[in-house]
Length: 285
Image (cartoon, rainbow, N blue to C red):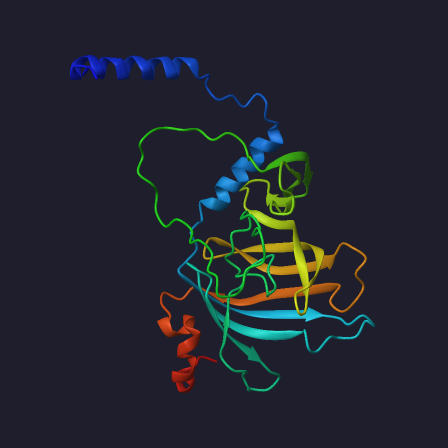
């Protein structure tokens, strides 16, 4: 095979690069609606607070009624939770009416799974998992730093949703969304933001109600209320309602996230269930 001199090879690469740049038209937002551009801005504002602090602790209160309309005491409960953000591994203890606490439990809060949603610092723009995962499976951690810059690329628009309506409601902007693809995983349907700062205030998203032993699944709509803590958006409450003909226990459910804190450190053993038996005397309350 004939060898090309280095100088000629360099000139050839430069010519090819110039042709590629001239052939590729610059990105244009003309095809995007103002709503799509607004959604892109809202997501950028939310992402500016990511990744979350390394640890978050909170109290989760879950409340639901039976099919007859009475309080479902078995499935209404309160937990204190200590969560590691990188993999959502968490230590949980059930809180009873007196000072008693339940045993140490390994948890992994997550939306669209057969367990309680959360944590309050969850990425609400994250896609739902493709399939239910056991609690032992850790999600992919969020990036913790900016990648090296090797070029300049402009992303135009939100690729997973199309904004079908934008309304001003008092101090809020209300966006109605339609998934462009895979509506089961792209779960947002309504977004409410502060009309000045574009910070999230409320969302409506799809989720699932898993009936034990997990073989029965019903679609839900979650109305998610957002707040700000230490300059970061957090989930403060969720109201869920099934959207099919299910009418049994837990057709409506409420979650409240309270006492949210961002500790600088937590013991490693909090996130290793096999070590719990060795640390019962120093377990947090």
